[in-house]
Length: 254
Image (cartoon, rainbow, N blue to C red; front, side, top):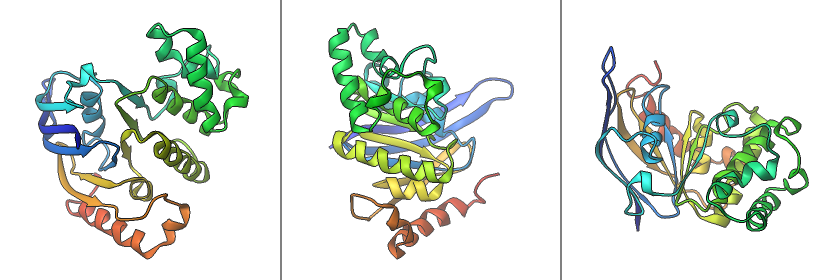
């Protein structure tokens, strides 16, 4: 069943100079699907996510999430930098349950939901700590738990692991896939790291240089659950090369 429908999405910023960010994007995403977006810096990926989460309402075309306009859908957003969404003066559990608190959910219910999520990612023992007491990976796991706590219709993730080292990024990818298998939330993920984009996804959407258009969509026909050993698999490299060929077709990043 189509869960997210993007039809002829266009976005232009009428500043000085006028900037065409998204030229024409149409895409259907199924319920429970994990889709990654791979493209050059500044091509319009984050702008598209801002449309999907209702932050950007001045656009052409039609976008719906579970048959609702984005501003009326429940969207969880995990930012590239946890500083953009987390409160350093609140504990881990209070950060995770912030959205529920804003909705007026009782403290007992908030903590029940938050503690369950933290237990799933092995962070419960840190639930009363502050962010400065956590590693970078723990902070991003806290951010993911926060996005999931209020039971969103869709989860948007904008390069959430880009600031982490290689080992921590790989570990976080496996943690994310474990969470996704348990929750089966429709997930859209922006990545600038080709191995990450392929390893996580059911499909990889390759975008052009700005203004963004879809250059191609590559189906990732690898079994789940995914493992890091798949990074050495011949099948993985064939899919990776398809993505890379599309990306490099117009010169890749500027």
